[in-house]
Image 1 (cartoon, helix red, strand yellow):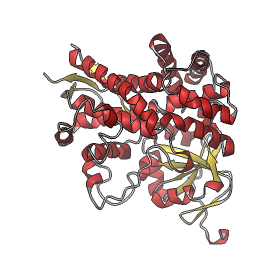
Image 2: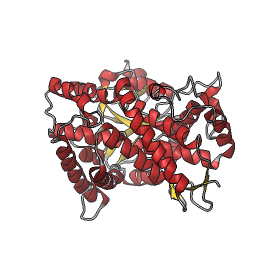
Image 3: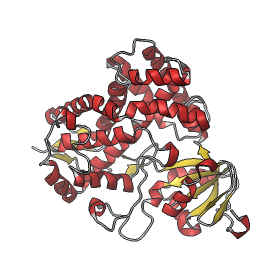
Image 4: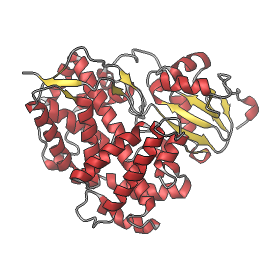
Amino acid sequence: MDDSLLRPLPTTGAVTGIVEAMAFFRDPSFAKRRFERLGNVFETSMLGQPMVFIQGSKAITDLLSKPEAIEGWWPESVQQLLGSYSLANRNGEAHKARRRVVAQLFSSSALQRYSPGIINLVEELREELKTSRKPLPLVQKMRRFAFSVIATTVLGLEGDDRDKLFSDFEIWTKALFSIPIALPGSPFAKAFKARTRLLKKLQQVLAKPIKGKGGLDLLAGGLDEVGIPLGDADLGEQLLLLLFAGYETTASALSCLMRELLINPQVEKWLREEIDELRWPPLLEQATNGFDVGNAPRLDAMVNEVMRLTPPVGGFFRRTKKPLEIEGIYVPEGRVVQVALASSNRYGIGDLEIFRPQRHLEDKCSLNLMPFGGGERVCLGKSLAELEIRLMVVGLFRELQLEAIPDQDFNLRQLPSPSPRDGLLVKVKS
C-alpha cells in the first residue's frame, strides 16, 4: 500500500465528540447526513474516541478483505456489560477456539433438535392471540418468544428460572448502548446489578446435570478441548452473550416484520397467497428447511427486505491493527471503524427508501445484505434466528388474520434495536 497515493480521511472536525455522541443517540439519520456531506468514509469523534464510519459494498469489502489488519471491538458500555471473558470481547486464537465450541449450538442437527420446541412456542402464542378478549402488544410477545427459544429450547431453562432471567435481561439489554457511568439509579448501574444476578442464575443452572437441557450437552466435548470447565465464569459469559445475540436481534426482526405486514395490507395479501399453500405445522423432518427460499421465495424476500430496511443491528465495529486503504482513503492504525449497515442498505440507485420485498425476486437485484455482521465474526445465531422468523410468520399468518389497533405510534425506536414505539397492539380479525 503506497500511502502517498491515498487521500486523507474526511473528518467532521469534532474533537471531544460530546455533541457527536448526543446526535448519534438521538438522530436516526446521523450517519446518512454525514455520508452525504463527506462521502462513504469519514472520521468523527465519539466522547473522545476517534471513529471511522463507512458505507457501501466497496468500502465494506475493502475492510473485511484484510482480516489480519482488523480485530473485533465494542463500545465501553458493551464491553463492561458483556464481560472480559465474552466471545465478543476476545480476539485471535482465544476468540476462534471459543467460537468453534459455541458454534455447535447452531449446527444443522442442533436446529433440528430445537424445531419441535420452537413450533410449540409459536402455537402457544397463536392460541393466546386467538382467545384474547383484548388487544395484545405484539412486540412484547415477540420478545418473550425470542427469549423463550434461546433460554428454554437452547439452554434448557424452565418456569421461574426463565421468568426471573427475562426480567433481569430486559434491564441489562436496555443499557448495552449507553454512557458507561454507573451513577446510582442510572440505566448502566441497574444493568450492571442485573448482570450480576444473570450470571449467578446461569452458574446455578450450569451446576445441575446438563442431560436434557436444550443444547448444552452439545458443548461438553468442545469445552474440554479448549479447557473451559462447565460452570466456569468463562462459560457463563459466553451464555450471557448467546442470550443477547439469540434474543434481542431476533425479537427486533420479528417485530419489524410484523409491523410491515400490518401497515402494508398489499404486501400482506401478496405474502399470504404463498403462506396459504404451505403446510402448518410442518413435518418435523422438514421443519428446518420447509420454509426456506426454495419452498417459500416470497417469505424469503419478505425477511430480506425487513433486514435491509430495518436491520436489527444498525452496524458493527472493527478496530484497525494496521493502516488500511478503504475506497482509496488512508485509515490509520488504531482506528475504530463502524460499518453503517442501515445507511449501506439504502445506498445506491433506485427506490431503496421504500419497503418493497419483491425487489429480492428480481434478476437485477444485487444487494449485498449483512444483517448479522460479516467476515470472521458473523453472528453465530444467524441460522437459528432465520428459522424462528420463518416458523413464526407461517405459524401465525397461516391460521390467523391480525389487524393493528388504530391511533398508535408505528415509528421505530432505534436502541438497542429497532422496535415499534407503542408496542404494536393487535387483535385477531373476527
